[in-house]
Length: 531
Image 1 (cartoon, helix red, strand yellow):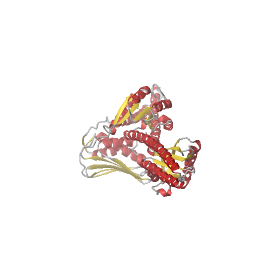
Image 2 (image 1 turned 60 degrees about the horizontal axis):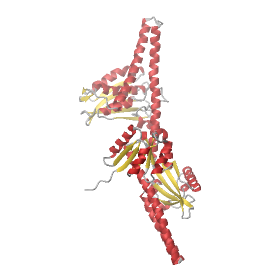
Image 3 (image 1 turned 180 degrees about the vertical axis):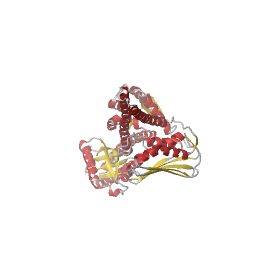
Image 4 (image 1 turned 90 degrees about the vertical axis):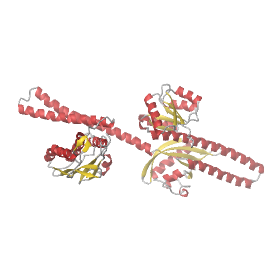
């Protein structure tokens, strides 16, 4: 039998029990036996652990009871230079995470965005990067020793020609060894001379340039390999490192083959034996996925804010209306019984509107927490379709829209929750009426296909822009209606419909052509699915 690899020993310094428990659960989810976690809540306790036993990596929260921010990292680095460090930040402190990497940490993670795979990759990356740095330093030290030994031999031999040949061979061997280290790395590694021309590149960097041959990169600068705007930024960063003689970290966006990529690049001055700077060494890590995750998080926060605004508006409008009508009646300013009846009817309508919004919010909460139980019973979908059409036909007629049905003659009885199926269908048909202009047509149908019953709502409405199609069923998302009459809503109907259909074990999708109309379809399995 193959021997199982030793687990990676992780020391977590985190004063939040909830965050610590989440990290522990994530490491368990990656795979049993891959990681061995020790947890302490104070930095002093963590330093004592590091002094007593070896660890492969340190997960370090920067804000602890006995130390805060970059002082926490400085103290940890001062006590252990061999253990790689991954700092933990919150979304509001991403800049602090970047500074921590510049001060010696191998990586940083944003707590709100950590996933089990990202956590495991970051731990392994930190270990690999630390080892790579140590290997580079050891290789450099060994090369210096060998050069000194060889120089002594050549001086003793006093043979200038033989010295030149040996030095050339030594340089070639040095380059070969360094190239082996560079090629083994997962990150893009390169060496540039004082004119920012590439002298050594690894395969990963060539991939980023479109897998072009190495000889088409060596001896060239970024001005010849990428768009001028990005090239000028890179050259300017190179000159900053070469002039200051200090390591620098940069997070920049580059365009490669028409696509945007984000890189975290570390550039280190390269010196000769005399200490003179002869170029720089660069390590570039692709952080495009991380940046996209950050942008997605920002978009979700924006949509949440918009959702709160919309909900506030949707609640405030009927409440003001109810308050106004009831106030007039209570003040006896509407003595006519017919007018009172009309006002009370409007109050009832606004109350129904409020109840529907609250029901949507409660349904969303229960569905996302897995707490909504379907009340399955033998269900005739054709009856639900006829009931929904009868319920909404007057709304359609008010807009001059023809609402019809077309269904297969014999549809089987399903085990489903009829109230929830009706809720989905009311939402789809209601949306079709909203977005179909006068004299339009809407058809609601149901057909049997394979082992599923397919329900579809087809309209001749305004259609949906192509860029909106991937987001239709996303929570809080509303199609921009700037070219149409505002339709209200908070962006939950289609998302709730999707969750309800999936709870039945079905699928939901949309097809649309701008200015021609749309078709929304969902399936219900003949045999009861999950939920």
